[in-house]
Amino acid sequence: MTLTELRYIIALQETGHFGKAAEQCHVSQPTLSVAIKKLEDELEVCLFERNRGQVTTTPIGERIIAQARHVLEQAEHIRELAELGRDPLGSPLSLGAIHTVGPYLYPRAIPQIRELAPQMSLYIEENMTAVLRERLRSGKLDAIIIALPFNEPEVVTQPLYEEPFVVLLPSDHPLAAKPTIDHNDLTQQDVLLLGEGHCFRDQVLDACPGLRQHMAKSDRLLQSVVEGSSLETLKHMVASKLGISILPLSAAQIGTYGGGLLCTRPFAGTPPTRQIALAWRASFPRHQAIDVISRAVKQISAQLPATAA
Image (tube, rainbow, N blue to C red; front, side):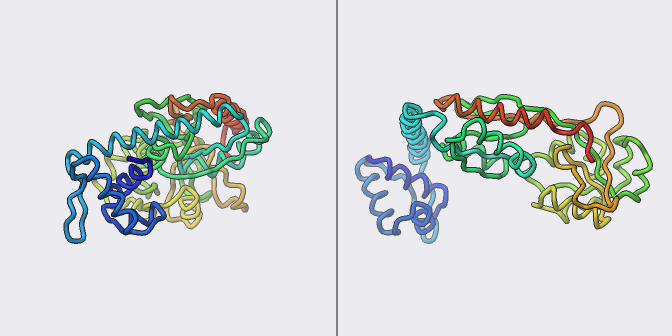
């Protein structure tokens, strides 16, 4: 039994197809098929049911593959320990962030990280929380920046900063005449939201329950137009006067539009907020590297404006 064979059975479970699994592992399909059959013969169990055009995992295969993931995590831990022995701030670090944080945090934080740890090269990624969670668990990412709550076994989280939500709207919109926006004001508007699967969409709807109720009763909201899109797309669509939107403060800078085209307004009373945190595996040995990321992000968050421009 080899680590390579364990990687092959994990890939086959994830893809459900020998050809796609082989492509994912960068080997030929016969090489992968022979290796998996060899492992099944060695274990004397059938890990997969092979039907025409379809591969499914057997119950015992599910349990063995779950253990294989754990074994690979521990093998990666051995490599991490070796890197720690060489130089905790001299080895590459893989850092992920959710889509609604990365574009606004990375450009500010990376120079700070390089100043604190000039020998530590960075691999940077943006993705959805669910994908980042899996990549962290599998060791493909060393740390991720996400929004709380975030619960994962054997993963440590550290709050970094909290930021309010603001309303983005065209400067000539009737609500622009108000110094603050009440939650009830939103139920009569076309509110542009991110598509399903984005955690920020859920945070907005949780913070504005009236908006969620309005969505259940009406098809006027244009959230389907921006399904699977980004905060920058929402800003462009607001500039096109297709509606208004709700953004985290760090994403609400509008100077690039110029000409007084857009404006932002805070919520009345206590504004809804989100808490951004750093997460890493409890077994990750390079604590100094985690500390560098934390310090850099906290320095940047302290420089964020109290209100959007």
